Length: 456
Image (tube, rainbow, N blue to C red):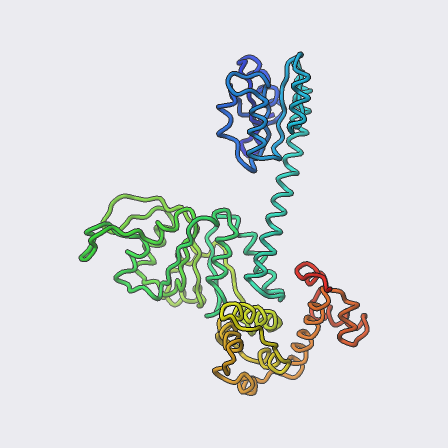
């Protein structure tokens, strides 16, 4: 059976070339991917935390012996399965190795069946171990992202799930949303929860940089490239190497630069102004826009080929008016942050105030709501009466009733940590009635149990 490099790898250490060749061949014929080494010193650079594979090593080796190699491998990754191969007189040493954490040992002389049986079991344990770690990391990311992309609406739940799923890939992303919906926040989440989250996040606003300086800002320039360029400058693309390049308000990018960006995205290479040296572009590109770029391309204000290059993945952020059920949680979140920032006590939000917040049109979306929370904590009047705004944007009565009903039920479930019996008592309705209303509103007690602590 032919092995594949995509399979888990068996790192096999044996100083005897004949035994090394025969054992390697036996494992390969069983369908395993094997890399063979003649000493412990040769294999150590290939060990790393989370290594997808196992280590098989002879005990008696020149230089670093198998026991010491076991200790070093377990220091690098305590869960790495290590199988030791021992001679006939090394049983006591094998027992010592097991106490030090070896997965198993194979005594010489051994059959191919015996070796492959132990290897197969060790690989299965490693697979399960790595899967558990991956699930824990995913769960940790999902819990952490809920504190950044706040909201229980189905739209926000789907958005968080997509961000976590896409973050681990290198696909370029286009984020679409109205002003103030949090496009840069979503871009930063894509970066932070991705595999290169520790690298640079370089952001540039395509609407804020003058056209004459734009190319230098994005690609950089060499000394003397133009009048006033006395020193070389590193552009955003270069700063983002290994990380993420965020292009905000991409619809404002000048047409001439759209052509250059398209070429860079296609070839994954760029040149500084004043240089003929091609530099590799090794970063994810996340672009954001508040307009329909497909319509803009039809109107010849944005290149259609650049749109299709940028939109490998499209994330749409809903406007706040489309997810009013998230307003209470968002407002409380921003009030807490503002109280810490301004070192002020956390004020209580009255029912009348929350009703006004729920009825407001929020043309500035989450950014406007955050500013309202800041003013609320500082004890300042709102810049415009939300009640007056509500009068000019009156919604049908049935929609207002459903909106406030959702708010009251969510608040009761929040306070009861998702326990329907406690929530129904708080609301003064039978438990069956509460479940019927929750089903109609698309609410689930599980959502509240997962993220909220138990009520004391």
